[in-house]
Amino acid sequence: GGAKKVVISPPSKDAPMFVVGVNEKEYKRDLDIVSNASCSTNCLAPLAKVQVINDRFGIVEGLMTTVHSITATQKTVDGPSSKDWRGGRAASFNIIPSSTGAAKVI
Image 1 (spheres, rainbow, N blue to C red):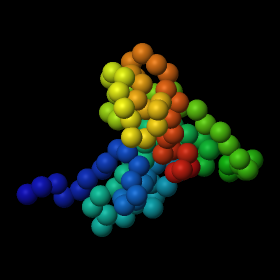
Image 2 (image 1 turned 135 degrees about the vertical axis):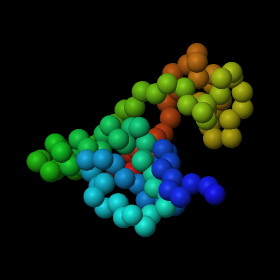
Image 3 (image 1 turned 45 degrees about the vertical axis):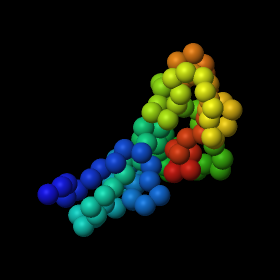
Image 4 (image 1 turned 90 degrees about the horizontal axis):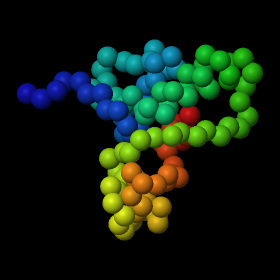
């Protein structure tokens, strides 16, 4: 057993990433594991890369902001974080600036 094909939802260093409206035509049937990038990437990439801005006007530089609910990697109560001091704050009581893989993907 086991799954013959797998779609993972976060960005991946190992699996090719596909975003509908951007590069889904590059998908090949022989790929067993693919990534659907991230929710932020799926929101921004179709606008930035293909459908609107870049194809018509070009993009030289950009800035994006993502507002997210609590994610699996955030603390539910204050505690130590190996990444940075902000990451140790309780997510349900604080607005915590963080990085996103979407900026790297786009």
